[in-house]
Length: 134
Image (cartoon, rainbow, N blue to C red; front, side):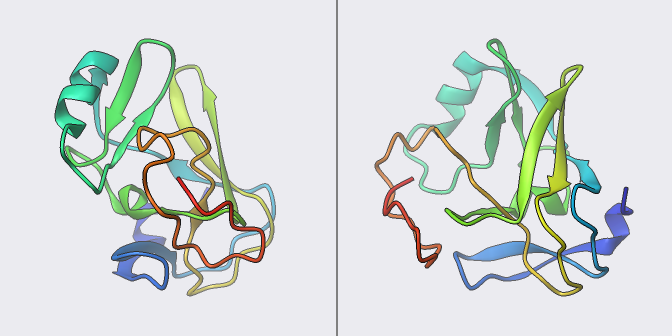
């Protein structure tokens, strides 16, 4: 796993700010864990009401993580229809892994899949295979 100090936040080509890596990451290498406050889905929906930028991720059928509270640089991982990172929940921990080799200085991008945006947000990833909506 790379150290959190190896991740940093900078201006993103996708949207606002993004999460970048200072070191190269090998394919399938564990990058880290999404960190934040554990909350219920009901509380997650309450906190998201009326917000365009959402930094909340589901963990399981009952729990979500609010990355705005006690989060780190991983809270700024933007969506892409052509991601370089994937997430797996293991024993209640949302872990991030490299989908392919990632170069130092590259932005980390995750396919959000189904999201709280429910298709209501225009995707800005710019990928050739962009689905157009998040």
